[in-house]
Image (cartoon, rainbow, N blue to C red; front, top):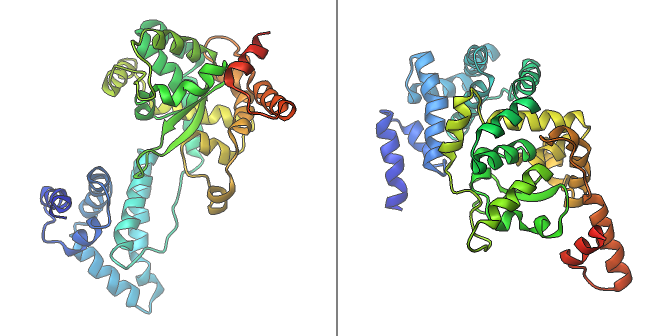
Length: 345
């Protein structure tokens, strides 16, 4: 327990909050150092600077506000948080949302929660998403690939075609990509690590023939292929540095991916699944669990827009159907090799 507490104590000292009981109470609920530091830096630190108050003063004021019979006094903390959120959102909406959610967490874990709902993103974000598509056109991605070394080129293609986060893409292993590579199915499913506190949790996405061909070339150069064999030897910083040199950020690829799928009519909850997000709404998170075959079918609607080098044909639905029909008539499971032989015939 002492080791777990050490990083919390160091973090409190770093921000000068060692004697702030409200922050101590909060940080005990935060599971990881990285997340806790983000809460401090992107939430509470900003709020304290804007209000000129310490964390304990904020909580003491909030407790008094809640006890007031005047509704205008009871909502003072909410008004202040929303006012600061609006001020930040004029510059950067993502940082503003982060700030709002961190402050909700701070007040909640000090037993005086805020009553305001998440303001989310306004219509301006749709405009920004469209600009992302314009900035990261297919032609632009092709130019990037031509200037990149082979591993960086593959990483760019996987980012564009799967919509995965840069860290999840860079940590791909052979076990995450092998299933459909062995069957020759297009688009091929890959399993990306979800950004969550639960280690080992993955979610599915897909890549087109562009990335599949390059992936086969890179895998052929590996001395030994086991499930834990890493696809990329270059680190995340190398790819980020390359993108920065060209005035780009890896998250633009995710925005492009999302807009293309939504334009193709893919259900929003399924777009969330393909991006590793929690589906929108409580019911969506619980019940919207489409099988891989359905996700592949809907992804294929957007494959012409997602593929970087020309039109990429999809044989995924045919492959899934063949497997079902053959297993029904032969009364046994059909191997990937058998499916590939039928597709090649």
